[in-house]
Image 1 (cartoon, rainbow over the protein chains, first blue to last red):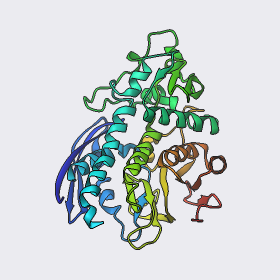
Image 2 (image 1 turned 90 degrees about the vertical axis):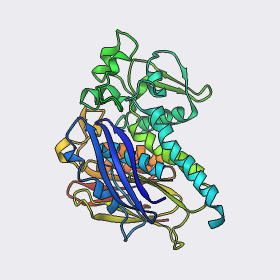
Image 3 (image 1 turned 60 degrees about the horizontal axis):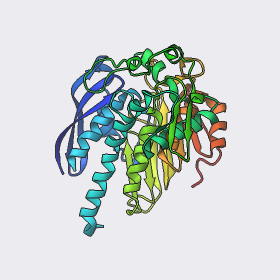
Length: 84
Length: 286
């Protein structure tokens, strides 16, 4: 279902709330709505474009290390689970 | 498939639920998780759920096979390095307060514990922590969640699961071809360094792309962060195995990592810090 969804994710660095926008079944935007991590969010601020960029036209999927982006990943999963 | 829309939707819902289930079960940041409840008992076998047993058992098996390069008993060592934030309250979680009191807590703090202190009994499905320690299942839990989610979708022969870069690809893509999987370039954010084609396999990547933080993958044998590789990608029959093996291979480094993968029976693509790719011989054979 299209729309904008919020989800919370956790990692060893703290909580992140992600906002995921779905249009015509594809993720068109993913941003950080709230950042409660121990370190500043600047290190994770560059991640949201990856969520969208991962939908590369050249390949079906992309495998990469999630590392300390785990909170964002879980937040996106959480947001997507509400998008069903 | 169009007629199956409700069945597909409910299967996808169940698949998503596994991610929440496994995180709550296996998180060391939640004092109420099944993992942290296990942590409160030392010296006695504790009956655990099938999922937790499966994760711990695999982690210990890979620890044995990697000579300790991969070792799930690093929970306290990780917390001591600052990886200790409580997942909801933003408080630092103090694992020491959850450990059984005492005399051996120092061993856990100084890293004198290892995977040898974790005993899994197949028959009784119990786990016994022989010394106070905290398991970190980060390297296996996400893969396990992917595998459980994949089981929910098995009836639909062709599907893909993407859990933040940990993948399980079943059957073929919409064009009837094996799934194409791009491997993230370790230093160029929006680029791919390679492409693999897979079917009925999981693909997981371990890496340290952010130099500033020094990474978060600890080498349990030295107590230092692993740093000789840019990334390691493993293709395996299950995501839990791919996830854990990618971490083990990353810590082991290039040659020992490739040997380890062949020994365990998985394929790998290792990228050294000079961005040169090295792979197991059968990686591209599908």
